[in-house]
Image (cartoon, rainbow, N blue to C red):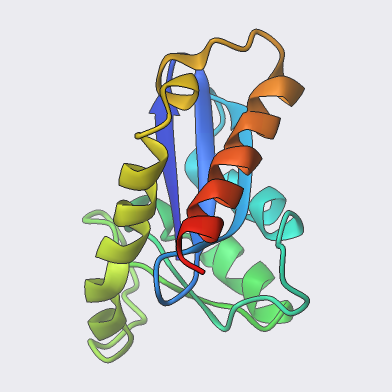
Length: 143
């Protein structure tokens, strides 16, 4: 599962497991499109093997990204954009899209940390460290 949270010129991109706990987190500038940040977030995984399925919103619907993720063994589940010409999905994988609320809950938990909401850190590495620290605290609370 993946999602991007915007705030003050920075995007926080995270991947959550099936229970909503973070397994990867990264930050980037607010200017690149969300679909281009999937690869960078997958490189930040805290687990050995990549997840079998990633659930994203319609912004993640891209044939190029789907082909790239298939090579790594990851299936992207995202509803088609409204202007899509060739619709390749039937409704079966989209049933998993209903589980997207779990990654939304992860971002709600991250919003409890004022340092991430306001972004007091000026340097990108410091802000990324605070994102990782927030994810660690969330993981420790659920032990």
